[in-house]
Length: 355
Image 1: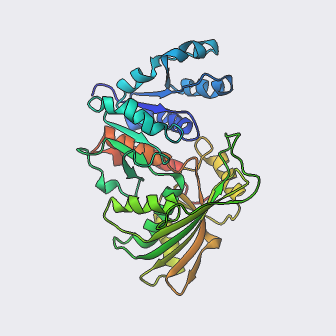
Image 2 (image 1 turned 45 degrees about the horizontal axis):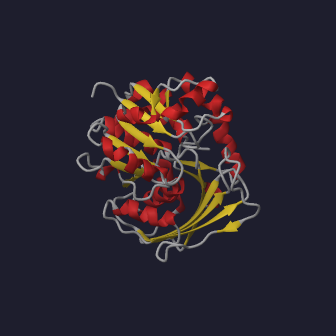
Image 3 (image 1 turned 60 degrees about the horizontal axis):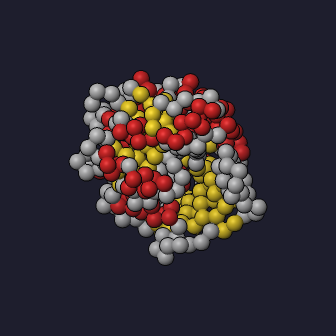
């Protein structure tokens, strides 16, 4: 492959910081070029697109949108399909449902010329489920051309389970129960805000909500069958998702051992904070693009151990940052299958031990 080009489709909550990260660490990641696709030319988004262009990314759009972007002072260099054709890896960050549509309309036509296609958590069934640090061991270059990076809450849930119940290589879990307390919408969104706390439905008789289902399927890629169940609700806030977890494990443990396991996982941050606004503010002040990239932020004061094997606590989900590492890691796996672990170490300084 002469040039390693990563193409990101979508500039929303995940797409925008992902493009920025790829541009900022392009040299260390061994990427020659970053391109991105934006469908609609909006003056309200002009500043965002302009800043991504300044970082070195190159814009594509549908052919019939070229004049619209020119009219607001932005130059698209490629049509949407041209950008896909010339890409080594495509990362789809479009709204729910569009990833599947794009797969059928575009991606399946370019299997021979493109190393891989990646979609986000909303695109259930797009490809093999993946979360960095959870199931890297089962990736297969002969089979895996389509990858679905799991959702933010599934990242959090899965890393808590693996750290506390699977970290010694054995299945130590009896059961896991989770309540996902979600923020109403993303900070950049102006619709779908809820006026008051809103409870969710249990749409799955076995797993409750898709979070436990997706985590179960994620571990199932490694032939690990886990007893998981989740519930979800929304609060009228835009700060952060919070996850309440209850894990019943087979072997007796101690609080010291629990905290030690969290500390050894560099994708988990610990905090003495109990307020979402304080955690969010820390990310805004110290994180890349104002985001916390850790998969989970565990509130130490909330932890409780009952009967020596029932672990309860709260953790914060950095919902606009914690899946970015997985998207970059799987991109590097497509580009550098034998050295991607080393390549992504350039991102390590962006992760926090403590928030």
